[in-house]
Length: 268
Image (cartoon, rainbow, N blue to C red; front, side):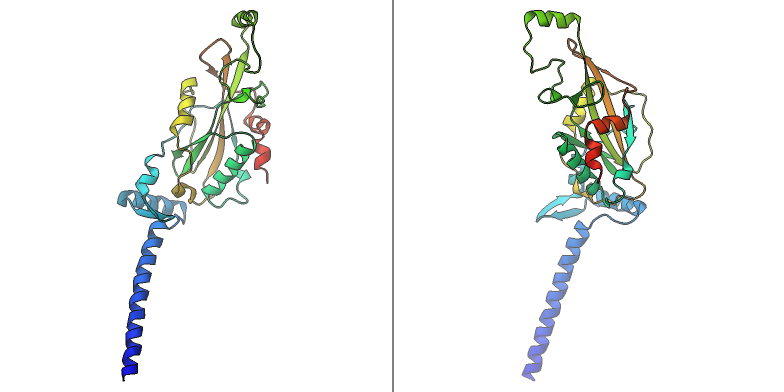
């Protein structure tokens, strides 16, 4: 009889431990579950997470859904009219299952071609990735280092004499600059009538966040998504502070991406 009582006690204790573990596991799963399902279901889940300010767990640290998005600024959609554009969606269809896969491929392609600074913005159901401004030649090839990232019209590898400086004031050479924005979204959009100013392009790089929020990266890369590259090209004279945006560019969107090396890096 005593043996039976001991067995019952052990069984009862096991049930209590099982229930306790199950509740804890369920809570953990419910707050860190990947956003999945169809596009419509994802949208509903995100609205619910936002309203309830759901607590999520990541690597032992608590963070809320609102906290995740609070520093994720909006990218203007519709965006300012670009100098050129190109649809890159097909480069990701064969292997990308989530937005983080698209982001990983873009980051890899950018790093391979010297783009080390970037900035992220929020767009409906996706994100926009902005590259740093670079100096290019008339044929859309990146200028070699160290002048590639200089926003002045001067070639920093050349020491000008006074005569050279005076000559440049009256014979200013144009410098060409490029900023690329990758927009990943399910929304259909056109371009606005506004143009991107020389001052605004700095805000795009400085005001965004430096990494893609996890909740965005976990979204499924469905057939509703497109990956567009928007190229913003400027022309700036050596002796002028401001620059004018070129619309349209003399180079196509594909030519810009090809001559930057990005297309070759995206081809798998």
